[in-house]
Length: 228
Image 1 (cartoon, rainbow, N blue to C red):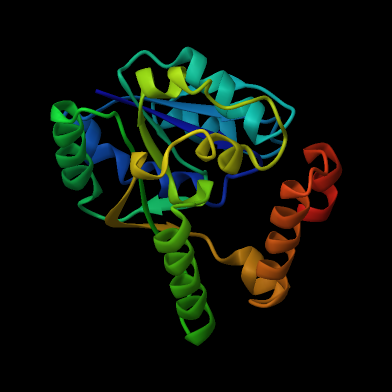
Image 2 (image 1 turned 135 degrees about the horizontal axis):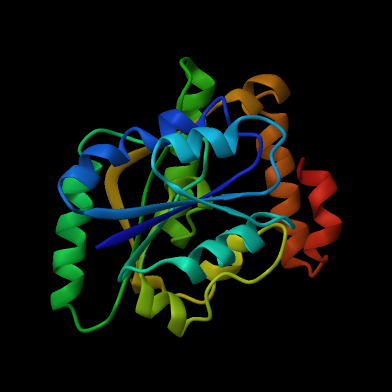
């Protein structure tokens, strides 16, 4: 039913946790394959993916290139794109299955994403989660760390991910109509290390700057250095 595609780069610290919630869904037959697209890691990322039973591809150039390569190799009618530092909470598969069933009876094909959450405690991460929830409610603009569950047919119809090193998630979602993006209740818990290291003000400010420059037409390759 679902091909899971995970772009990864030096993700040995988080990848095993990302893969773990996919196991029950694989046992139930919902997840049929997991494809980890390694961007040229220097750590044990590829070995962890291989030991977990995932197919491992190697594609450098940035996340857009990795997602595109993984989707081209996917064999099943639904695609789930998931970052290598994001963990879907327990029970996600039941909600995903319900969405797939409903989507099969709908007139217009639709995609779904999960609720953004951070693997951290305190006021700052909860505030950021609320800000993201508001952004999603107002603009239906989730980011890639919320995952994307989409029919392979719809993915192909809108042209799929483009080979760009950054903002590939926003670029794809701009080609979906507002009513084609459904927000699921299940959470996608994202590793908070970057926010902890850079600060809960500086990191979101950096992300917003990149987002703004992208919409002003700055080439994505020029934005990569600012984002990292």
